[in-house]
Amino acid sequence: METKELTCIGCPMGCQITVEMENGSVVSVKGNSCKIGNNYARREVVSPMRIVTSSVAVLPHENATPEETGVYPRVSVKTASDVPKSKIMDVMDEIKRTYAAAPVRIGDVIIHNVAGTGVDVVATKDYFVN
Amino acid sequence: MNSYDIVIVGGGPAGLAAAAAARDAGCEHILILERDSELGGILNQCIHNGFGLHTFKQELTGPEYAARFVEQVKARGIEYKLNTMVLDIAADRTVTAMNRSDGMMKISAKAVILAMGCRERPRGALNIPGFRPAGIFSAGTAQRLVNIEGYMPGKRVVILGSGDIGLIMARRMTLEGAKVLCVAELMPYSGGLKRNIVQCLNDYDIPLLLSHTVVDIKGKERVEGVTIAQVDAHNKPIPGTEKYYECDTLMLSTGLIPENELSRSAGIEINPVTSGPFVAEDFETSIPGIFACGNVLHVHDLVDYVSEEAGRAGQAAAAFVAGQLQCGSPDDLVHVIAKGGVRYTVPTTIDVERMPEKLIVRFRVSNVYKEHYINVYIGDTRIIHQKKRIMAPGEMEQAILRKAQMQEYKDIKKVIIAVEPE
Picture 1 (cartoon, rainbow over the protein chains, first blue to last red):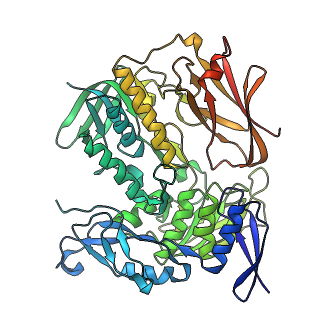
Picture 2: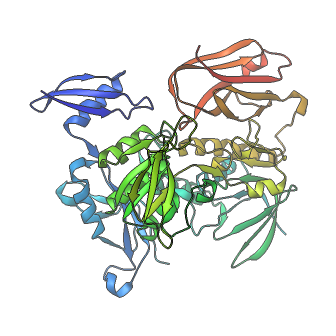
Picture 3: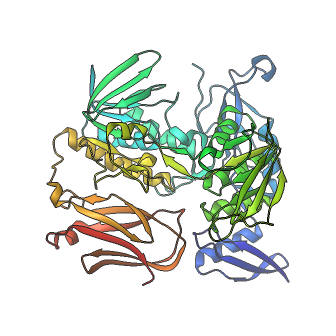
């Protein structure tokens, strides 16, 4: 029997929840004071997922290289849906190596299938060259 | 002199929502003045998600939330000027502003909406001993450097204050490759959301030191390290608990203060508790025709509430311009009194004839209260008795007053809102 300790994020109460697990499945959830805590804990211990947000530099056009164009402004990005918590740093490594080419529109795909998660990284802001 | 029906000072979430609502209420000539080079305000640097759950029923990032309101403003053809600094607002609603293309201009407005937002509390207000080396940033400044300008403020970071921006920046710096040693919080509880403590600190094993503060900053040219000590019940450092952290960066997330220099010089009365203007139920300040909304009024926990309040301020300003905002005698105003654990309320006065059917009064509590009640009294009669499992200073609370109920009481002078054990 394995136990995991969690803080519920459902509300400011922040209940300390203890989850008992056996062979990767949940045996009991204790310490929560409502249904939200129970649901949160069951999801969180089995497969914690997170949206990753960051920003990438924007090059003025598709064929520009970072070297020839110097420092350009940035556009904010996010994973289009949540990714496994264990993959966050892999996702960030790929985002850091990425440049977007102007123009960029909200929702444009900046990276396909980031870090093999099956999830795209998309722009969360417009960026146009005047 | 240019003239407009409504001039809105600030093009962040409050200014944008106020503009769209004022136009929808029939006001034609509206001008937004924004000092930054784009609309959207601070949301542009808040690239994390979690915005808009109430308004749009989905989790947006800050720039996405801002974009929805920028679209509303553009779709309505509302005029705005960027890179424009407002220098003065006179009590007669003449707004003095300047930018590079127009130079200095005076604009006369039938109504003014204040939507300037807030500013971070700086190091100078914290009385931390030590030199003034490079490497001390407010968390919001660091957020702008990393997210918008693409610079890393440092590699080994200590954060003082556990407000949401500090927590968000602890995660952001970690994702960008910095080592965040700890977050120190003077109070015995965090001012940030539970969700942020779990997803920004616990996820990355960053310790949160409650009842701790920075007592010394080492370094003359650049920060070399900070000393953190535990504090007692009176927030005094306890000798012998000092611990030295070697770091190159100290970030401060120690509170936000509404930015009311313009309001003060206009002669608007400021509430010393919120540092924002006193307003009536329609967000009108002590000067007729000048309204306030968003974080310049009181610091909000969620942008959704900013948008909602700003929309009501915009409608009220449009009604004022149309001459439909009937002003009762000041003697007939009902004062909203904050008592017990309630630090302040917005609004502080209510004109019962003018109030909507349901009026949301927002407030913050002064401590963490478990299993307490929100009680609202008119005279000796308790009209609202609502149990809350928990209330914390970091989150806004609300009470909803009903017009029909208020009208039942003749000659009421005040409504009392209190947090009580029963």
